[in-house]
Length: 309
Ligand SMILES: Nc1ncnc2c1ncn2[C@@H]1O[C@H](COP(=O)(O)OP(=O)(O)O)[C@@H](O)[C@H]1O
Ligand SMILES: [Mg+2]
Image (cartoon, rainbow, N blue to C red; front, side, top):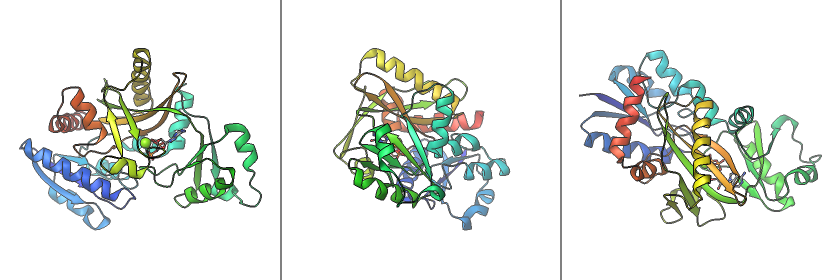
């Protein structure tokens, strides 16, 4: 029987979410008859990965030191196959600014944006007016390498802009400012290596003003609507864009790409999640279920793709 090592937890801001993903993955793989071991990843247990000698590692980590290419690089050095994208795609996926730059090069639509570097930012000389003249209000302010909406603010009042930028800069050296796109939130799961398959488009509705941390992880605070309530031509457009973005961003195995479809039917790509949430009620498993693939079967496919890479 194949031995799968599930890596979970870790040290990022998304640790708690990752523990839930990891536990769900362990349970489903045991049901499928795999020999499963798991590790809560921290520097002290790195040596154990080699000792366990897994046939494949299932990476159920989100965020820094897990989703960002670091663990992927370590496993490459050890020569152990792992689920999902490789080093470069993981690192790019973790950085919303790099992702958007590649999307722009490929002619794929993403909200207009600007980047502010910490070393160039001075709250006393900062001019809110030029940004507002360009983007209008609200403006979305994000730390580019966080997930789960951590550190993100939707700024509706000019006087809140500086505080939002400073809040985002706590997480790193850059802040991403984006034009706010009003419309329908969609997310698209894709699975595959060279011939990726797009799963049914999911529409997300949130109880809060946007899909923030609380909406994402509190039962009842958001809902997944499958199939999304959008026109057929929009659906085809979005499926095509998702597949192109998946390939342009060099994803392998699986990923989930977030979109907003504006009121005129124009889609915008927000970001690429190379290790999206993996509990039985997360978005990707819901999309798979709508395509007739249950959660353990989805995990099995992801493992098969890891071995074929
Ligand atoms: N440009 C935007 N316009 C409108 N809403 C946005 C925009 N960017 C982000 N959001 C909202 O913030 C949420 C989180 O943003 P996202 O870029 O997906 O980052 P993450 O999910 O990694 O925190 C989105 O699901 C959406 O609700
Ligand atoms: Mg997102």
